[in-house]
Image 1 (cartoon, chains in turn orange, purple):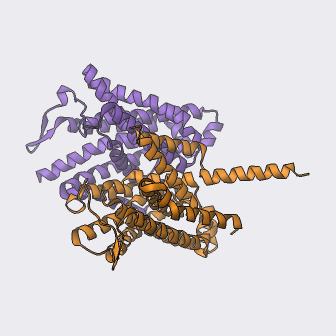
Image 2 (cartoon, chains in turn blue, brown):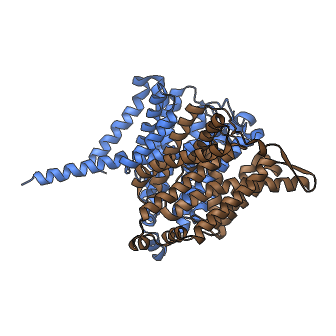
Image 3 (spheres, chains in turn blue, orange):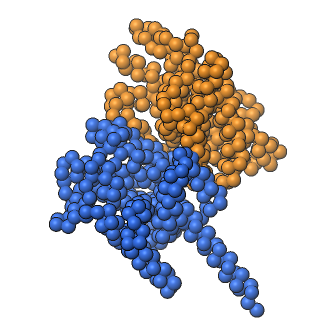
Length: 317
Length: 286
């Protein structure tokens, strides 16, 4: 890691730590959302950026874990210490089932994950005796662990920040491990990896489950922030937006999904303050991103830097 | 027993509608390798245009043709100026067309509002038909089955018995080769995507007369169409027919036997197929 990146990381971390003091509750809330959805986008990007699989079902894991936490805490009075891990387990179990999708590739994988996502949304929407239907489950408290309890949104922001930094570091270790290299090998050429003796199907399945677990963790963070969960959390737009965040920010990076999440959420907040058709605006962003920034902003920055370096070299005698 | 028969008819008539939508989706994938997620939005938009036309003119036939034609125009513009630019990158196509669907859905919400609206069926299709065994069934949905079979037969004949169909089949197999023999593939694409758009818009009018039209209907129907093409195999007309029947019947019985989990019933066939035939019943390597 070069010095510039360490300095950048420390400055960003300092800015994030000081945020509640200079930015006020609105921006702190938006930053919390940005971190949570950035984490969801990061989980999508483990498959998209490293394994080359485009999943559109990640809202399912996100929502199933959020519902599990909400139902356990609100209806059965279970403590955070049990409800949060149970949420992650529930989402991961679903990922173990949906992981079947890695038997397919390309378009089929995309279409099947879309269909899976709608199954979960349909259950959340129609099984109203258990999920609360369209109203969902409300009055989820802040998390409390033993004697320590989160009591304000600012405190919760710090909790989310800590969780996200920890996940980011863990993710970094994962993608630099032989496992992560294997994934990128499969993305580049699956047949070659197979002939080298890798069990590529199993490799992708493991990545799918890990990615589902990470999305489930984001779901836990989401439900404690949001205080309620309804079928919207499981809906298709959440899955697509998570993918869009990763793509806008730049796939295959760690910071990219978070930048993308900041851009998408910031834009939506700004647009919905004066324009009713904000879903149409999101649609326009999708279109623009595909047509003009297919590698995302991180990719765009990389291209610009490469061009500048080339210019510099050309300028040398 | 009577309900079981009723559900079977319900299932087949839903299958007829699903076939209208899924056949266009599967044909445009087969020939152009385009995954158009805006197909559901085409359905909804065509339905709304048909609704307005039916109110203005009082004619269901005008509504069907007008709804289909409006989608042909929109579909052509989207195809030419947006989808064409993604090349064969499916990921980009999916994101782009989802974006298009969001835009269409939101504009439709602004124009037609958020209520459930029903396209007015013609007078001779209202009321009930009495089937053997004293079963009363809505005339409209009963006739829809025959309409679905009729369109399916037309498409099958077009695909397998005409020169145009032969060229399209050749294009599905090997596009470069068709181009090299001097056939204008570009014009062929415009025609097939126009046909797909027309089918989607027409399905919207037909479906809007019994499923009603509302914001979000575009995604609900799209998922059914997706399961149809996943089960049947992408790019296969016969697959779309069989897939539509399977999905329609499963849905009808699912709604009847497990109302809260009717969506979940759709999961079964996909999961089974993935275990044994990941490419669907009639699908090939893509």
